[in-house]
Image (tube, rainbow, N blue to C red; front, side, top):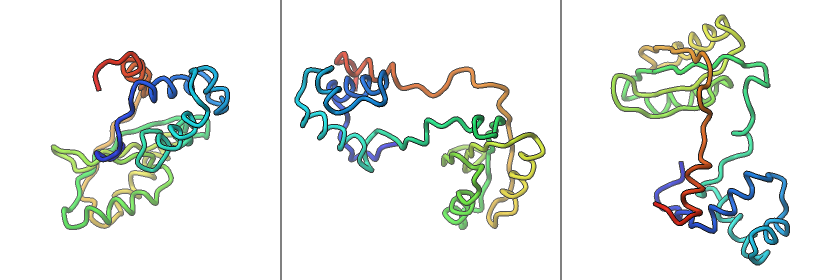
Length: 165
């Protein structure tokens, strides 16, 4: 998530991102021609959109873990000793199979997305998570299939059309 102080993309930024979604390998010159705007404008906007506080994420977010041999996805709710929270997150990040961590409200403190090769591998990963000092308990839910992948294109289309921001 982009920090609150990051500038919100405008309709032209949205059109630029949609053009990149259509053609990820497009050059700055190609985008300039497609959108009918100056090459320098495209370059400057891409720099801003891909900056550390911009809305464009790392390329690796497009890589499917299943294609790397990790077809099983699980969501692990983690209860954490409050005094150990930041250290727990740091230790969980050391596990390669931990692909996402959200701070949450409710029964658990963290919602961790984990990938695994199979259920035995998931058991290995969750056991490793439980061995992290400060982790009090976990609760795992396995994904049967992804009914709808993460999508932002409809939001970009709405923004490009001048809709809500």
